[in-house]
Amino acid sequence: MEAYRGLGISQQLLAKVDEIAQQRGCCKVTLEVLQGNTVAQKAYQKYGFTGYELDPAMGQAMFWHKGVGGKV
Figure 1 (cartoon, rainbow, N blue to C red):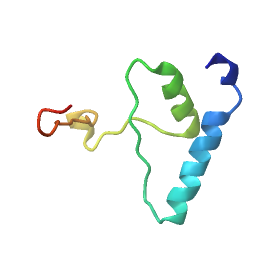
Figure 2 (figure 1 turned 120 degrees about the horizontal axis):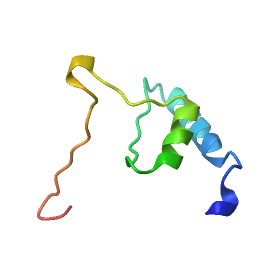
Figure 3 (figure 1 turned 90 degrees about the vertical axis):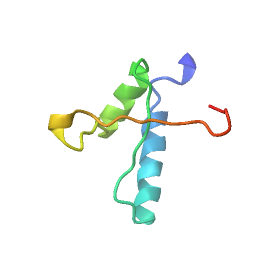
């Protein structure tokens, strides 16, 4: 919704996620974003998220999934 853009809501949400992760002793937070969702990508980058590579020679990590019982 356009009326809520630029209010810093995504940054507040990400800060809360970060706070909870620290409280629980997590070592990292991961998220999934669609390649075409550049608005979300910019918000995540602003907060410090980046794409990641386990081995730079092998390229970026990919998320895969498989449905169970014919479900997606």
